[in-house]
Image 1 (cartoon, helix red, strand yellow):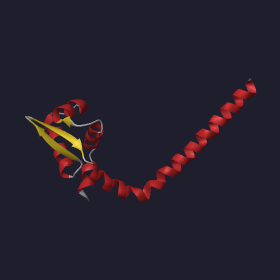
Image 2 (tube, helix red, strand yellow):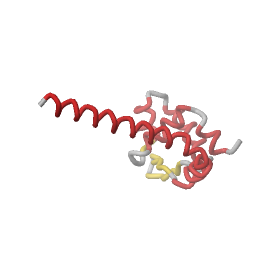
Image 3 (cartoon, one colour):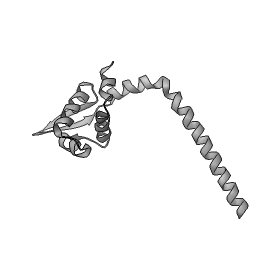
Image 4 (cartoon, helix red, strand yellow):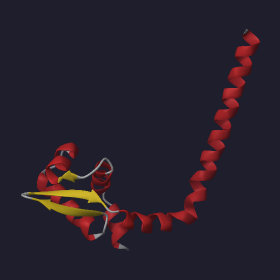
Length: 112
């Protein structure tokens, strides 16, 4: 298994990535936001850094972690052949919602 996929296998690591979408954060910030000890957050950040999902920048005594897009590209490329699975369903859902809205509008016009 690729390091990227192994890194994404743990929900806590995905939660860390979700937090970092808002911008760089320190281990302490992430630990507090996720309700985990700093040692746990630090260990998971190390794994994410090894897999290429995050980078660390030292600022005096603190390390700021930020997302790196390259590892996400690998995952997106792997997912591309499967995109039709959810796009088709979303298209059908959109069509159904459009039908429901048209039906509701027709009923409102009839009641007017």
